[in-house]
Image (cartoon, rainbow over all chains, first blue to last red):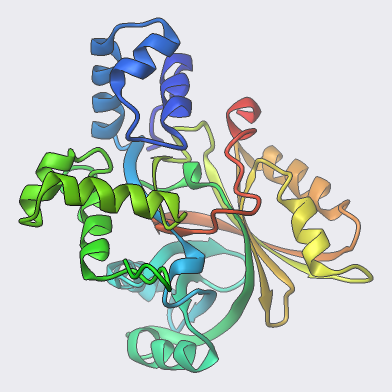
Length: 161
Length: 166
């Protein structure tokens, strides 16, 4: 079931929040010519429906582990794919988990310091999981672009991610 | 934060942690949670923002933005520096994440499309970028997680374009 698409007003509010989500509702209301109450209720609705999450992002260059690793995983038996994906999604260091069609069965993305750390991360968190047959990794050298508006908002209420 | 090295300390990381959960948590609530003063928290957050370490942003779900499909597209490059190809790929609003990598591919990207025809059109356009030898696309049946807590700030993560595109 797809999430509902945002309407024009939603999108204008999201645009106003895009680069600094701590901007006040009053400012947004003034800029868009609507009431503060409308801004507040729209933001609340988008958050409740899992369409929007106002959150802190940190600069990758400041991170202690600044290299992206794309981990492509082939499963032993196809029936194990869903359970394995769920397990990978539980690993806090893994930022992206997708069930894929085409190259391999699953893609997980994480951040590591270097090759050595990638190897130990794989050993610790991935290759030991039931169903992992084979992995192939691409290690990032330069993270060029990331548009955080294309997220996947899963948890809405507790948002403890 | 260490003034000389810019290294983040424990309190910075705790502030970040709270703001991840709720980016609009008030300075007062942050101060209470960290048992410190509002002045301290305010100064810390400002400092994190000014040093380009932290931003509080609006993350939207790709489905809410009108896209139904996410795909990973690996790129093999020939006869052109991979960073130049990556820069060209960054101009596509549908290609929302780009990383130059080492491995059997030169660039890994994540992209979104509205439907199957959209995938086909996007791949045709990507294949036409000078220097692109081969695309290795893989469609996501289901995305269980895409958090993007850590992003590059200063390069091409422009936030314009996608709204217009959908």
